[in-house]
Each structure stands twice: as structure tokens, then as C-alpha cells.
Image (tube, rainbow, N blue to C red; front, side):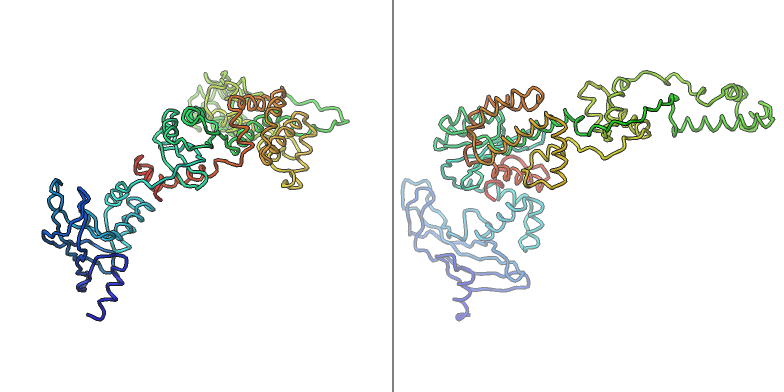
Length: 531
């Protein structure tokens, strides 16, 4: 044992000073390590004065990391010293072994750090399951308490700060995340996204020179009031995303130009046969049942059966047989107080028929379009009209025109990165619609400013875009850039952006999913800042 003791000491307490190993006892499931403290003196936690006068000693049994699948318990003898300062309210105090124990601790520091790492990575329930596998089972509440007791990490005064929002409860409660863009580490989480809260946080840090943000008004106001000395930078990705939304609305407004005009035909147009209007279309269960009964009754009457005989054979009343016999066609029987009644959809049916002929076969998309025009009802009526009426109508022969979103994607893609087929279709669309050609020039000019950081060209671009009367969505986008012009020009001129902040927002979403969305603000803040 005396020969193996130095090796055991080096194995168990190589990183701890002031501890002497006495013995190691192994039982079936527990390894008990006996040790004692060898420090000659200790500092009083009350007054900080060192003392070497021993009052007594006692045993502590902190639990340690497992070894070879066995529990390890350290039987550590520590001493209680008498404080040398007579005015100190503490008369005696127990010594602590740095790196091994802390006040009221029931675990060694290395076991505590291991549990903290598990808690930060997996939180409560998942972390508790992992500790069972590691051989140090603890409850989920213990892990959460360990995380909550951790101090905030030391943060140097940031120079470039990124600001963005994150959802604590989507659609209801939002917070603010702040990231040091230079080190790419989160600095702090705020419980809301109010301008006053952000301004107060920024005012406490006068070293901030640059604030990267999106164009949300509360972030703009908070940065202006809290850090007037800082340069505000609007994120380029958000600018490009807003431009893409405006471009898609412009393309959708000119969607009639996406289908090439049909070639004129030399043959005279054929006269269309008058359509027979039926309140119940073919395939309707009541209509088919009525048609079958009408055919059966007329067949029996034509075979020579009397009306009473037909009523007995079919199990119907005589009045029903008389009503069917008087009707020359089944459509004459399609009556009822709800038949041929005007509906709220009637005013929009010509538009739906036109969009169906243009190639739009998505009932949800058609409903969204007429809802913007003032249609008050829900999606079900439009779906029924599409499935029962429009599906039976033939669509125009020829290739399906590209969608507004596809054309927008072609406009927002660099010409060298477009496939040959997409380039040919885009060229045909622009040749067929001069307004979309103007839109393409504006989009490429804005893309040039984004990629080459030429923000000085933005005022001229805004004036040109606002002059485009046929592109109202693009004009509105340009108009909305003017109130935040300085930040947008800086965003198109400076190399800084909010990409790293968006990455941390996605990480916060992942942490919330791990905790099933039930994490409080303090626990979420600890995991974001300390992981």
C-alpha cells in the first residue's frame, strides 16, 4: 500500500493541493477514499485574515466521480480554525480545499462541474437520464438548481453589438438577444423587446461603437437613445428579403404577362353551344339518385305498368310517382329553397374562372386572392367551387406559365448562376412585359449595392424606384427605406452584419425545444450565456 499510495495520490488528487491520501477501501459497489487536509493555515471567509490556530477537526464525505462503474466517496478530514481577528463576528471557521470542496457542498468540485456541463447541454429530464448512464444519478431539479447557481460569465466591454428578437412564446412574448459580433459570443438576454429596456442596457456600455440590427422601430429607437455615439447598421439580409417580398408582389401584379399571348388563328371561331345550367352538377349524390329514379319510373311506365303498380314496386307514394312522371327531364325536379340562391361567392366566380384559365389551380391561393379583394367567407366555399365546377372545365392547351414566385427567384438570382432553361424563360417573360423589365433593372442595381457595398448609390436608387408608377410595391419599399436611411446606407457600406445574431436566435429555438418551451427566462438566459 505504501508503494502504491503515491500513484493513487497522483491519480486522485493530482490537481488538488494541500491534501494527503491516507487509504483506499473498495467494497462491492463503493470506493471509499480517506484523505486529510495538510494546509498549515486558512483564511477566514468573514474578514479574510489568515489563521493557523486549530480549534478542532471533523469528517466530510463529498461524493466524487465514479471509478470503474463504482461510486466514489471521499472521507476527508478538515479542520476548524479560530479567527485571529477579535472583531470578526466569526469566532471559528472551517477550511475549504480549493478545487475539491466548497461550503455546504455534498459533491467534489469535479463532480459538480461534470453535472453542470450535463445540465447546460441537456437541461432537466434529458440531463437526469444522462447522469444515470454516467453513474452519478441526480434529479432534474438538482441539475436546474446547479445551473441557476452559476455566476454570469465575465464579459469585456463590446465594441460591435448585434441585436435581434427571439420568441419566448411565439406570437405573444418576445425578448432581445445581444451578441458581440467580433467574438461571436452572446452577451446578454433581455426579457422584452422594448426600446426603453434596450436603451438602458446600451447606456451602461459607452464603449459600443457599432450596433447591427434589423429595421424594427423599437430597436432603432432604443439604439438611438441608448447609444447616440454608435453607428447603426441595418442588416443586408433583411433588406434583401424585404426587396424579394416587394418584387414578388410586383410580379404577381403582372401575372397576366407570364403566359405568352396565343397566336392568332385563321379559322373563324366556332359558336359555343349553350350550356345547360343545372343547379346540381354531374356527380352530386342527390342529382344522381334523382336521375336514377326518374329513369326507372319512366321505364316502368313505358313498359305498360300503371302508376299505382309502379308505386307498389318501388315502395314510393303515389304523389311521388305522379311528380316524377310529369317531369320530362330530371333537371325539372331539382328544386328546393336553397337551389339557385345567390351566394357571396357569385361576385368572385368570374375572377376565379379567369384565374383557372390562366393556370392557377390551387384553391387556397385562389381563396387568398379573392380575400384580398374583399371576399368575407372561408376557404371551404372556394374549395367546393373548384372541385365541383372548375375541375370539370378544360384548361388552356400549352405549357403551364411560370409562377410569380419562380419568376421572382429568377430575378433575384445572379444571371451567371441561372440554369439555361430558366434564363430562356426569364428572357421571354421580360420581353413580354416591359414593367417586369424595369423591375429586373432595379433588382440588379440593388444587388450590386449589396454585394459591392456601394451604399452611396442608395439615394439615387430610391428616387428611381419611387418613380416607377407601374410597380407600387417596389415604390413602397423604397419609400419605407427613407425614415431609416442612415442605417440602411451604413448597412450597404460597412462589412458588419447580423448573421451571427440570427445563428444565436436559431440556437435559442433549439434550447427551448429541448425544454419543451417551458423554460423560464432566467434558466434560458443561463443556458444561452454559459453553454
